[in-house]
Amino acid sequence: QVHVVESGGGVVQPGDSLRLSCVASIPRFRAYAMGWYRRAPGKERELVASITGAGTTTYYSRSAKDRFTISRDNAKKELYLQIDNVKPEDTAVYYCAVDNKDFGRAPDLVPDGSWGQGTEVTVSS
Image 1 (cartoon, helix red, strand yellow):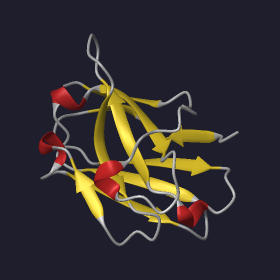
Image 2 (image 1 turned 135 degrees about the vertical axis):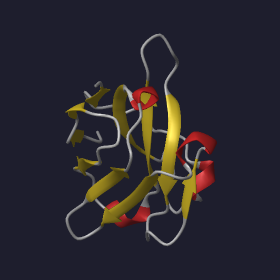
Image 3 (image 1 turned 90 degrees about the vertical axis):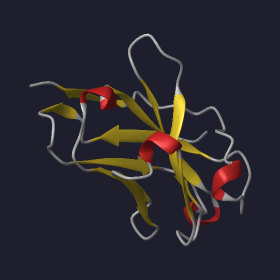
């Protein structure tokens, strides 16, 4: 059973920067692509960004291309999402996800279903 814990959310103002973190307790962490999803109020959960197990290839959704940076530290089994110049439309609960297969490509990530509680980001002036 994969266990993930997200952190780093909070209430921020437009233009601020934020870094979200996720700790995943899985063996062979570096073998799995991982991603960040978000669920905005009243909307479906959507993929924001993903990264291969080695951290060499990333994928971003159209809305995340300019201001989001995904990265990982395989030694610490941690995944990160840097959000710069946050905007009100970034308000959402952010979740990290583990691919349901090892050595997958970042764009092909399919969450294995082991969702954590998420970390809530509220952008408000």
